[in-house]
Length: 310
Image: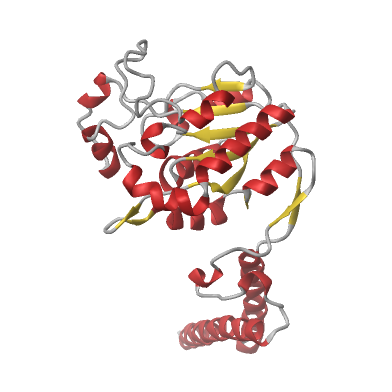
């Protein structure tokens, strides 16, 4: 292949790659509706240790909970599920005495065990359960206790649902689309999102029905999770839109996203592909492939010369 042909091929490839990267960054607009025949609400860890004053990690999450009005929004999702005939699956977090014998623990696992987070007397015991850190937040109880649409799964033990029966319980009811909420954003919620995606579920994360810890050394858990929600989930939505979609209305997701400056590409979500900024992005990508093509072209010429000489 002549160098000029190779060069033209790389320029074409550069333009194609630039176009697809641009479109991924913009998040395409999509109309979404939910139907109780195949969609369910999933709430992770709606428990006192996360979401009540006096909970063992309340001081770490309270600012994020207040910022996103998380408790109100989870309550609204529970209410919408009940009113519109949706299953609400709760994936709780419980630790029993035998769980304290683990010899391998990650950073947060060790902390949870040390501070008695989600502790219960045993898998078959409700001794001292009511009002404990493992119990439901009081405002959620009217939507959980005694409700036929609510399924409380086996507890997850670390972060994700791999060790519990959430997936099985949903599949047995022909659920393949999930409205995901709960605590905490970058730990159990994100881990549930990832595993459910791997299992073939369509997952929509309700971004203001979760929250995360803010720690001076470990960082902002919510901000970390929101990035991955956008990269991985099938959609990131607000509670208002989730409730509307659960009621049968069509809502539009995608397009504008908050905090686009965090990506280093301000206004990327609404940028006109013909704008000067987009042209600069295209030029930068094209220049990058241009340099690659020149390098490979030179290598091709060198190899060709070597072959002819020998």
